[in-house]
Image 1 (cartoon, rainbow, N blue to C red):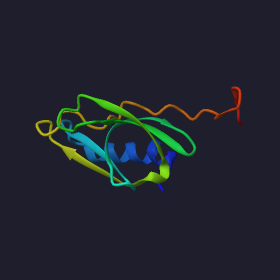
Image 2: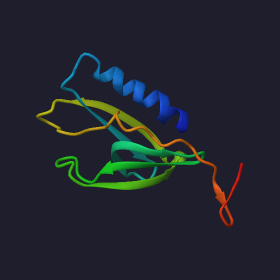
Image 3: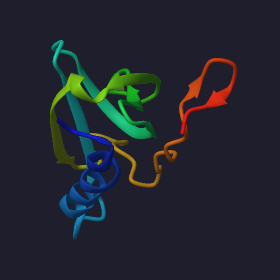
Length: 114
């Protein structure tokens, strides 16, 4: 199963490696979910213990609008990384955006669980 460490360390390193030596490359990262849905990622927003939040493109053709998805790690069955020429795809996965750090989960009336 892909976990927070994968999204924080392995995925960005792999994408950077794929783009190395290709300054015009547009990286495209897709999450293939167990329910058959495929999310075209813009960036990872937050990593928690059991779930993560990710911005994804509604339509790859325009990359104009995004949605925010909250997903349990176990829902992701496959992740694909591909490289496109800017004439095929103008925006892809962003290595510039870093996920927010994990914070203690809230319980009850605002009491943090340690």
